[in-house]
Length: 311
Ligand SMILES: Nc1ncnc2c1ncn2[C@@H]1O[C@H](COP(=O)(O)OP(=O)(O)OP(=O)(O)O)[C@@H](O)[C@H]1O
Ligand SMILES: [Mg+2]
Image 1 (cartoon, rainbow, N blue to C red):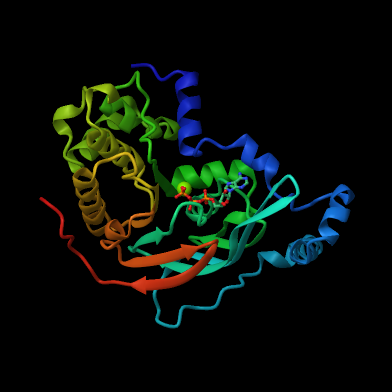
Image 2 (image 1 turned 180 degrees about the vertical axis):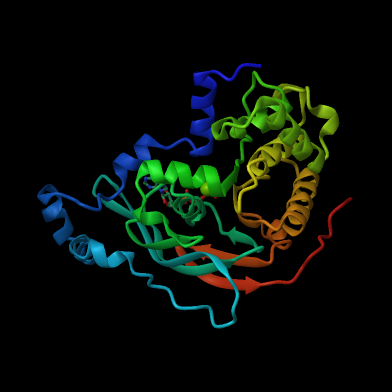
């Protein structure tokens, strides 16, 4: 089949997590003009943040210097988050979606971010993926400062390093499973036969070899999500991000999906950051980060490698 520009545009949006214009317009402007001054004076916290931002502006050259200490236990932190804030301005209100967050994710780790609705999970994942800019703080992924990248750098970084799995699958309805999985490879100038071969290998990995010719509406939710997973894996990313990947699945299928993710992290040596509100699903992760009102309240390291599912 022919991959048209509009198909590419759709995937661009998909991989970019469908950049929310409204969200961007509402966020606190990092380089705010004097129009906001009066408002700032009524909010000490925002003043403090703006001071930091202004200082960072002046010292922009110095910011290139690495700021992170070595990990004392020798583990390789593939994601480092420091002092991360995200403040949205809605009318005269300021929502502290992330209120000072620090953590590491290590190479090969399955990390679950758990919290109730509105706790800041998606905000955090969107920051990690460079889909939104933090108000303050640092995010270093594979030695790249995400918060300092421009949009072009971010698009390139995501294409080369990151795979996304979405709650709503985000498959392209006019393409079959094989074509959906192969699509990210079109950006890499890989010949069609090779694209399809790699895509088929990924479909086999997620147990959907027999469904290669099925379109999304000819598959169950669980099958569609496995296609989504194969598509995330096809570019062989170092890191995978999943926001409520089982949010549209029943509990049995959710557990199967968790087991598959666990197997893939282990066998393909991926680092996975998954957001969920479901504590019982997070139990399969190596690390569980609990977030309440934009703050981390607990980081739990686990060694669980199997899940009490229903295989
Ligand atoms: N674009 C935005 N503008 C204003 N406030 C926002 C915006 N996005 C998120 N928020 C607010 O930030 C807080 C965290 O939202 P977030 O979407 O990160 O929560 P969540 O933990 O992912 O919730 P859920 O489980 O319902 O998906 C919420 O109070 C939310 O209302
Ligand atoms: Mg969310």
